[in-house]
Image 1 (cartoon, rainbow, N blue to C red):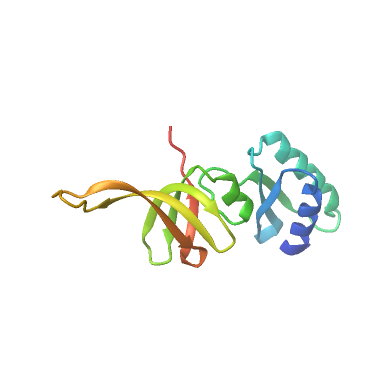
Image 2: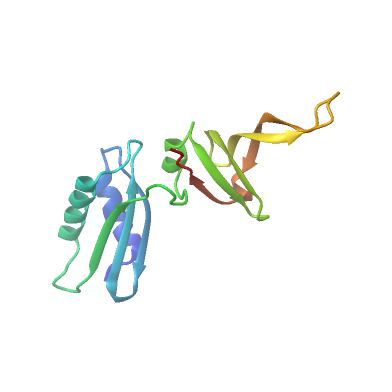
Length: 154
């Protein structure tokens, strides 16, 4: 069976020229391949089916049998690649930091080294007894981020 890196290379070649991008691959026991893709507009089932058929045609089932699943790295899937961060700029996200603390806010920007998150914090206001919620921008180094996911609110 091909390695995860070899399958990833095939998938990235299949996605060239489209707005789709590779997110992740899991290769399990008994040749179970789970492939996750995404795009700025999201991924529908017909796109997953098409990519599955194209990938299956490039893998040799005669040589070794396998199970293949192609799906969208959808809601609640942790961000793994820059495309996911860029897709979610302006949207609400949950950030788990390496120190186990959590933040929620609107993802304002992304660079390969940091994100900027617009959050609300309770802070003391001069001349007032109670802390009040104020909007703050937090620059967070990606080295501090353990996991980041999108939040869907209805």
